[in-house]
Image (cartoon, rainbow, N blue to C red; front, side, top):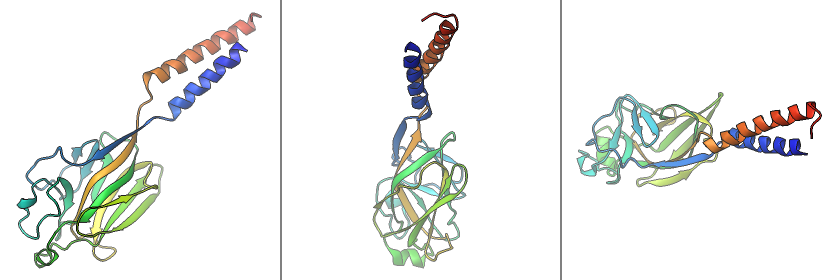
Length: 216
């Protein structure tokens, strides 16, 4: 009976270790203040890493030279023309993550001014979630001017996510903005879980030896 109890304890501990706790976070870009400078190297922001040949983290709306920025709050943005490079998103330091929600908008307030400058607003935000183990999940989000929330149930177990914007499907040369990326990452099991598992293994071995020796 004691052996069965300890075996049950061990199974519970292993299950806890194999089902790590989910840790949620939101990237709101408020920690970045770079004067809207062009970013061209991977940038770590609140647990996620963003990479592209050309993107911005807007922190001063008045700094937009034409067309007007969507909002004075900090956010990730990509502006065209010829600069519509997709932005890849990974977990800082590597690992699997899930995206639950984000806010998205066209970048420019004045679409006419933006168009005249060649910096067209995207009509759609294109998301590609690259799944751990292979396969992809895609979403095309219709954009308006002003941030709108979007939620997801299938952007889970991702190695990476790629964000781009398009006016005509199949292109990515358009301007967009993203904020408040809500994501989950798996936490390393707590030390107490490992301690319980090791204690269970040790006790099970001890009980097995006792049974072999004819003890109860």
